Length: 384
Image 1 (cartoon, rainbow, N blue to C red):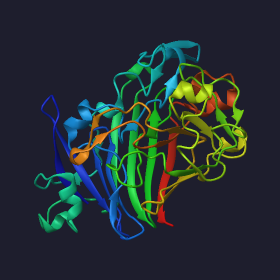
Image 2 (tube, one colour):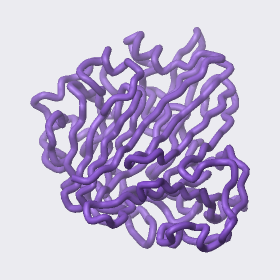
Image 3 (cartoon, rainbow, N blue to C red):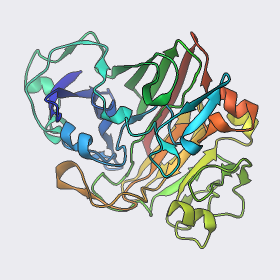
Image 4 (tube, rainbow, N blue to C red):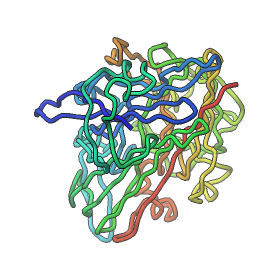
């Protein structure tokens, strides 16, 4: 585990970048600003490393950037209708930042907070991201320095969210752990405890492009999603109460299909999202999806790089977002990210679950006071 200075924020505080390395050649860079995934280098079919996630060169890019690129999202990922909910007889008002709705917690995003790091560390001298990846080890640049008290393949970020933060009840402690356990896996684990009942839904908002972060559109990527149902939305992208079968719709990814095949279909749901920006219910039924066991949510593949990514999660749902809203976003190494230059696969509870009329869906997202919430998502990379 090595650290690199990652620049200063507007208020003068410094952010850090932390390099994870696995025995099978994968490298990840994560920052304590937003607990975000900055880079993920995985071997392609020819053995060359490709950075497959969009990102920024330094903390200031994340501070001013849009799209939640790579960020840890909470307290409640995705949308809450009407920016409010009722819980235990009390109405809670959130910040409306997406029309009349609350998106990803409102405007005081977790992505714009400096998270704590659960390790004892010493920073090495500053350097840019790609220079870090170009070296076999940061220790080669600064022998004997780096992070102590943690393996080279994992790091935990922590955040204390006070009662009333973003409008949600309860003093909450949140931890996000990134790890590279081997076998081509990036694992993200979430843990949270609260002293009051409160809704939770955490996710990672990485934008994936398996040809490389700066390689253009992903409409040629092939996807398969383990979902018989998706949740249609209204014009504000709030899910309707009744899920719909994917069969016979542009949302049918039960067999391998290019993302771009139906992305411009003459379909009301596609028009609402400007492409794909919809929640899929993982598994054969809603009841199966609610079982909190690790299961395969979907697969993404690029013929150009030969890289295949399998998404595994114990969360019941996954939002598929084809970066329809990205426009001229400054990125790493001089890249400029445009519309549909990546796809997000956000494991989560159902959007607006706290307002659902289905008691199972509503209760699943409520963390009880004094209890512990945990969830895990694994992105496993291989070559075809």
